[in-house]
Image 1: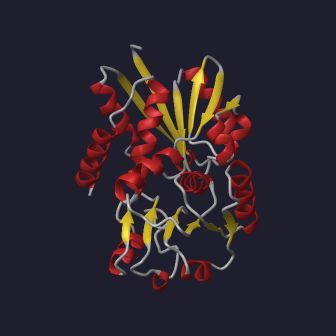
Image 2 (image 1 turned 180 degrees about the horizontal axis):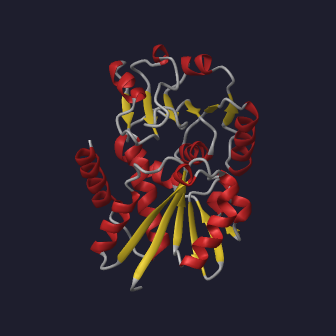
Length: 285
């Protein structure tokens, strides 16, 4: 593979994304040239209804692939020609590969979260995990943590029907019927061994805490998927409570490394990408 590789990210409020630099630098190590563009729905003043037009434009412009983030991970599915088995099971897409005029959806969030989790929290107790947020990223984390051996997963979402649909899908694809809906977050947290936070709350554009800090206790581990900022209010509160923590940078790097392979056919050095990511965060901070 030679020549310039055109990639992009579709999402809302993505001007702070480090993906362009992350992919371009890894490509340089492989002797490749990547141009990575941000297609920001906020800048365009568009919503998910713009996705059909944006995909057609991507094909005309010669994009090799696209990453997809909030709020497009589920809305984009009907527009694709094919889905990977993983993205079908999760019900969300975060990576699209174009081959001629066909778009195939993949999901690297789950494997990316697993890579980061095993790196950051290798001894974490998986007896009862609470997932806060059943959207695209939350669905991927749910699938991943169950595949890692979680004995029980309680899913909390502001839309109980969405949580129920995710639990049903997981229980169909994975053995043990270990996923369940929990409408009362405080009650679920009482017996939890760990928390995965997968809502936009805490992002630079959506500041705040996703739950009452008093629900955190020393015995919990806390994984936050938000990575802009990297040190979220939730992680700060978790450290004050004595919890082991995992920041969203781990998942971001893990999914990017697998996405790089899908886009280029080259095996990314995830540890190198992680070091680069954290240097970018320190520099931008």
